[in-house]
Image (cartoon, rainbow, N blue to C red; front, side, top):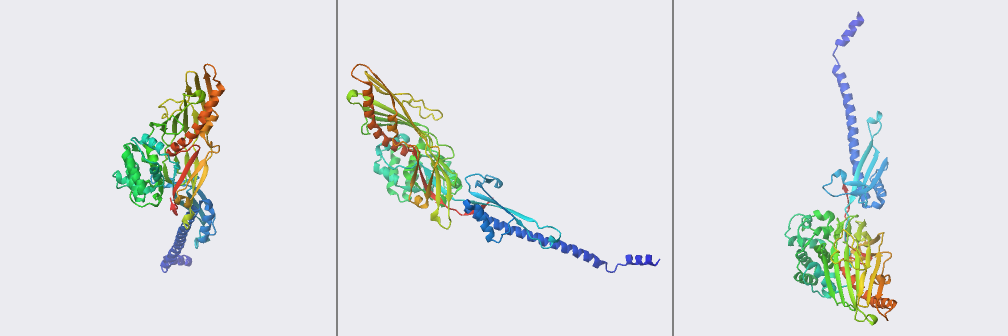
Length: 553
């Protein structure tokens, strides 16, 4: 009875109940606060780790060759020595805004311009560690470098023959070009800034707002290009060259259109605003090379014929048929871009027919030498850029250059069939001599090829000095025409007496050997004007821009 009443009194007694509830409440609150403190601490710690990882990613992107060492050094310098794991993945980052952010970094894609860091380290608990293990904090960061180079291919123009160039440019542009060798040398020695030329071109075609991409998509004539060249040359202090271009403008038809994207590949700078100063476009380009490339592009795939007459010493006549193909897609004559950017020359076909007067047994007979040359695309690719932001003068660009495959024949090809670049051109035996008593036919073939690319390094001093570097085929033939003559297969038919076949062959070789010496410089001048050389490729870097590494993604 007593125990029951005591129990009932205890149950019914409400004194101190609030204290019990409050004790339980405070216990729960303190526990939640402890967990909140731990969670907040972990969040703050993760932000600190993320900041250190961001710095490490920038450091790694600034030194891609030693990316992991740079990342670890940066993490250690920020007090993060106890790293559970660090993964450094090199790849390529696209700056294209049309690509989804998550897909802009592609691991393992070369040439590298970015790194992704995956960092994991232990988080610290203060209260919850009594009943749970400390978690692992994992963060990721992407760093990329925006270094750019401006480079072009095929711009040697070391020797000038005014008469040959006048005939060639007249055929490409239409009109009657009559410039002197001094005029051409003024163009060769003049350089204009790329952004100055593009800005002048935008003004000339009435595109005053928007981006350079709007300019590249506009319909531009040769006249627009020449007008822009005059203005940019004057702005660059090249008054003599500007006067030559003005003269050229008055001597050509200048109505053909120029596909600008095939002339200039601006890469990421295509979206830059017109008229604004951009360090990546402040590179100098050679004025003669610019105008030569525009002339070729304006001609498109049309075949042109040039009669050089008897202007070459030792020859009775010299006729040229020329066809210039379309360069491979995604390639301009000059390119602005990061490692991986590529420029290519167009496939070029030309047919030379030289005639020389016979002597001795062949006196009074015209001897004909037809030569057909097919030159594939040469290529230059920006392989790497080395930049030190603290020492801008130490910048270096390495360009892979691959000379074009050059194939040459002594033989006849159908007139007007050179521009069918989708198929090969049939080459038949050449009729060299057609006389009542003597007929001679001939055929010969020679090829220059280089499978592997040659690395050409350009320092900042090379850029400032407008240095042109050349890659040659390993089995380069010093004289293509002479080599053809050395391997020529002659078939001689002689009617009557007193004329020996061997004597005719010997006389022909003796007569044509000087022709080879005369044709070599003609070929060199023609091809250099077109931006290609026999067995060689010329590359020039116009500018190197070393931007600092930045976060991406």
